[in-house]
Figure 1 (cartoon, one colour):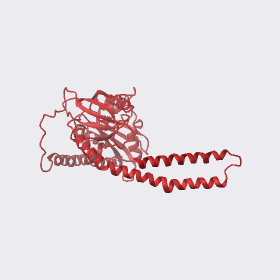
Figure 2: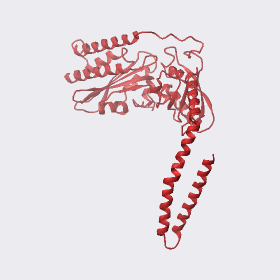
Figure 3: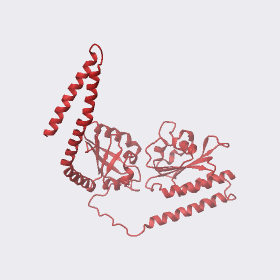
Figure 4: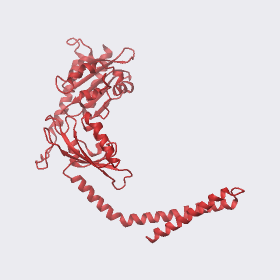
Length: 388
């Protein structure tokens, strides 16, 4: 404490001397050589004396409080991870800073994947704006609050129906953070598809390889084989190769299939097919989606220009596929939980069209292996289009 007082006194004296030097600029004759020498001396004093003293004081403070603080932080981290309720630490925009194990299980997100992403992407589209507003208000120190939110279909509840949560928000300032964060604690709101309570027994881990992964791999191989046969067998299916491919993927690989074809000579895209689910969310909006111009869809336009594939799990931007005539985002109309936008590119790099695949409800999101298979099929479709 005495060292800190001495350092503060020296710093005060230094500031007084600097103020006197600044005052000499107003004297007749301007700045004199003696004053310049004094200013250089004061700068050297800061570099050689004051700054090293500050570093010594900071190091002493860290050594004095370091071990205890580290132990306390380790305890707090362990408590945070072992809390039975899902808990997330958010910034004022709803972006996840960290989440505990229960939250990663609830939202189906790994901690490393969730960090830096907005948690609102896991909520139903109509809930997102209100949730962002409440988080921002709490971060502005306008008081803690609770609200009810609905998760996107397919998260936590499977096919049992919508899942609602009570989310309690409160402002916190974690150690080392320069800005206020928001602590979000989630609790089941009851009703169909509610989250299981802590009293329900957990399923024991399955030893050995996951049969689901093996089955998924076999299904992808079968799909690739069927796609090749569909594109080669023109006699039994005289339609465009793009339409034949879309029909094969519809239902089997994706709930929604949007097929867009480039005009001859590299012209703009035009929508040639929209295959919607036979029933369920968004099926009645197929005609509205088919009537929209693909050029108004940022994600499709980017795939056509850059020739790169886009995989979105719980897409955050509801306008990624454009909007309907009344301004409603098309992605919200489909209630898609994941999407895959695949350009139909030739080996030369020319893009002949774009396939957009959407999954909804309790269906698992697109995985990297499925995205890789879709890219291979898109090359086959592009070659078949060129040949036709």
